[in-house]
Image (cartoon, rainbow, N blue to C red; front, top):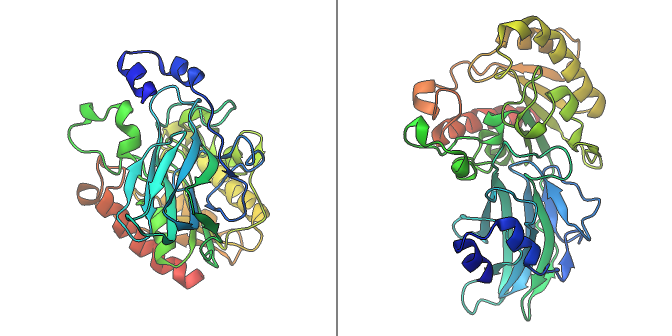
Length: 358
């Protein structure tokens, strides 16, 4: 309450956050009863918290009782906060934002078993989310149970895992933007984006698999993404700079959606060799996975991608022809980024292909 009053008086957010007492969770983010989907930095989960920079990254937990409080680090945000989807049991999803104490309550008087799901929805993609100290990230510190509540074992984890590597279309940017382009302001970017309802996240769920979304706006093989993220071949093996990915659970399928941003004439000749090197690096990292090379939804570098997928002699590298999946007039918000309907169409078509490989 005090922070809201100070903010209304135009006191800078950095001063407000410095003055606020740090709230420590009773159960840290490192507790094995918390289940994580996506790429997370767990090195300091028991203290600083679990950290992710990707939309679609998820936390699942079960508890018995009336409620609990979620704890997030928020002192690193310099602009507006990112958005998070939250669902309790099978109730409607609702959008929340990170807070030092975010209360979650079950139905009045319902001291029963509950399942809570959190999914990172959207970021303001221009702020740093690669080099520490990170600005654009989720820092989940843990939970504090309400009186009489008990943390239970997590939900059963899906047997199969699908990792998606892409750009803003995979990240879910501009899924929900409406109105003329001049109203697509940066301060509304976390609201426009939707990592949970993206084609990537939903196609994995439709195929009965766990999604791991790795998407960065503007990313390509020949250019860096927003937020200081380096080109895909350099960023792939890392959660963020100097933080290698966790290889304790490898994906069964990797889906590549790369090339939409690599459209400058000067990079046309470079794209083919880079794509081959990218696939080779993925294969070295995930020796047993199927690697599905998508034709970008706008057809960028389609012939080069098909040739790269089919010429390497790897029987588990396949080209996925998306021709006809997306009608830019019907299925996008700006001619490029998929709308909710476009994401639904692509998710259903991709799920059918995933089922054949899972």
